[in-house]
Structure formats: structure tokens, C-alpha cells
Length: 214
Image (spheres, rainbow, N blue to C red):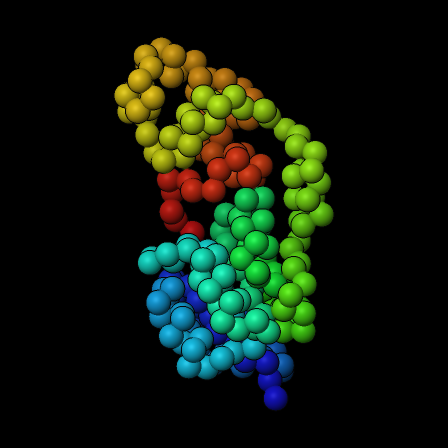
């Protein structure tokens, strides 16, 4: 019997691509799809798949929270977390949610299939491409060390706020805000906001950038 899979992503094109990738194999059968947390929980309850592939960002909640609920309700189910924002915080969030595997969306389809195979066989053994590196970074933090205020400014930049809005939010002058932004850029080796946010995501400094495009 093939390993049954449910795909959870709010983008139909991504679900279609994943379905085609799984259907090209001999050992998987996609038995359901969902575009939201609520729909996912219903489809999973109906089909009880061997493996569920969750996107992290869903319109009505977090795929990580959904994964946690599924893990509690279905202890032996394999759970694969698929995300566009593959920072350390997301990776450890997947681990803590009880996921079996963590895969970035820019990975080849073969990596998702391999993660699903692992999840089906060892649902409680977590795997991720950069797990060793993430563990090392957590144990011995390296890279830019931002001050608490610089972290606040970085978070507001990620939310899409400009200099004036950040100044009002933090009750500081625009000149001071510009100084903080310049220091953030310098520490991250960035020349502009986009570069700073990409570097911050890669380093796991932020997990919710303003650009929700995937």
C-alpha cells in the first residue's frame, strides 16, 4: 500500500506542484489537500494520512500551531514543515511543534519527497538540512550582535515601517532612528532595507518580514 499524504498550502499552484511530485513516485498517494488550518484539520480527521505536509503561513493561523495539534491527536503521523522563510527560529519552531522534517520551499521537490519518506518511517526523529548548523548557532551564537533597540528597529523595518513611523512608535527623533538604521545596516553588511531583511532572515533574527509573497 502506498504512503498516504495530505498537502496543506494556501497556494493552489504549490499544492499542484507538490501533488505532481508525489504522484511521480511509486510509494506515495495524495489523498487530500487543504488551504487553511481549519480545512487541514478536517481533511486530516477524514483521511488519517501517514504524512501531512504543512506550509508555515496559512490564512487562518500558523502551520506550526496546526502541526502541534496534529501531533497531539495523531502521535504516529509524519509531519513535514515546508516554508519560504527557513530561518533558525522557524526550524526550531518546527522541532518544538513535533514535526518530523523541515524543508525550505526553494529546495528541490526530491528533498520534500525524501523528507516525507523519513517522516513516514520515523515520525518522531526530526531532520532538517541545516540542523547541525542551527544547533551550533544556538549553542554558540555568532554573527552580528544587535542591541535591544537595534532589534526593535529591525523588527519595525520588517513590518514595513519608514523612518517617521519608527520614530513615533519608539518615541525617538528621526535623526536617532536613522542612526539606528545605519548601524543595523552596517552590522548586517547591508546597503538597503531589502538586503538587511534578507540577511536578518538568513541569520534567524526575524521571522515575519513585511513581504508576504512566496
